[in-house]
Amino acid sequence: MKKYDLIIIGGGAGAFAAAIKANELGAKAVMINDGLPLGGTCVNVGCVPSKKLLWAGEIVHLVKNHNISGIDIEVKNIDFSKVVEEELALVDKMREEKYQKVLENMENVEFVQGKAKFISKNEVKVGEEVLSADKFIIAVGSTANVPHIEGIKEAGYLTHIEVLRIKKLPRSIVIVGAGPVGLEFSQMFSRFGSQVTVLQRGPSIFPHTEPEISRQLYNILSEEGISIKTNVQVKRVEKSGNEKKIFFDAEGREEYIEAEEIMLAAGKTPNTSFLSLDKAGVDIDSKQAIVVNEYLQTSNENIYAVGDVINMPLRLETTAGYEGTIASENVLTDSRRTVDYNSVPYTIFTDPQIAGVGLTEEMQMKDMGTCACRTVAFKSMPKAIIMGRTEGLIKMIVHPKTQQILGVHILSPFAGDIIAQAMILIKNKNTIDDILNSLPVFPTLSEAIKIAALSFKKDITKLSCCI
Image (tube, rainbow, N blue to C red):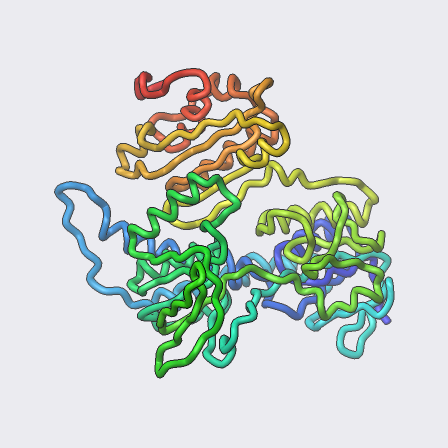
């Protein structure tokens, strides 16, 4: 039996960050992985490949819809299979450079390929081998949900994993779920030429953002030709030749739609079922997520957990990585570091993008009984006017007394880049006056932050461009 200071179960962002920190601290550690290839979701079946395809679709759309007088260009040909081949080649390259080589350079960290399960509070079994450690970090991620839909398995479906590998563009596709994955892929497929229908169980797409932003993105996607049906419940699927019939309830009526492919984008389930966590004294919640405290410590004081497998908010690549670093430091040095989830931004990589950080209006109303908030259309942004991209919005939420910035939510091109400024403002507890005393470059989309702050003090329609 091999003995280690730390056993890390998983091979994605959280696991690698934990391993890097453990290596820096000089701990004898081992990483055990039997899920996705090294790198986990992000590099293999998440951020890297999906954003490559989204960018390709955005290029196609931009050529067709640049709206610049005097420029006449066209898309002569789209070879979807070549686009996918380039995407997969990028995955291979980044997996090797950012994960395999990184692992090889960690002198204190071993790697074991295999499925680990606990056999006691300080031992795991991998195949026939038993490994023990004083401390553990669990970072095994999650798996796409397959909702209970009659006939779905017989008819066949795609998840975010398989959809990244198909070489033939589907003529039509139904996407079940209007969260980040469903929205991103709906626009990507539509821009390449597929007929796309999105079926959403709730009353709105991506309900976690501000309602006006959600409505505006709904309108934009609909104008691009994507059919979005909300308040529907998918009931069953039938195979009909080369097509699939998807039956759903819509406000008490049964309807159906035919499509060549079905993609399921209805959330994820933490990968805890195979770990035998009961033998380690680790509690899980009703959604199979590992319950952790603010220090990422489980009900077993020597076992920590990070990433998609835990019950914390904002399951993002960067969050998992940061959690991995903090968990490794906490478990190995008895420090008490935490994650300020309120200052962690998110982005949905549609075009325009949705990005947000901090409180929403609903959250502030719940906490304070009032909302000091302003929404500004990008029709007031000089750079947006120059680009012909005035469809965006920015909403800012501040403390009603101190005017501290509490939340920023954006719909615009490059919103994911702009939101980084808001992240720092919220993290550093800056106020409206701090923003007004700053000098952003003109003309840039990042001016939206200052213009939103100005809207609390002045009528921005009566201001000149260079404010």
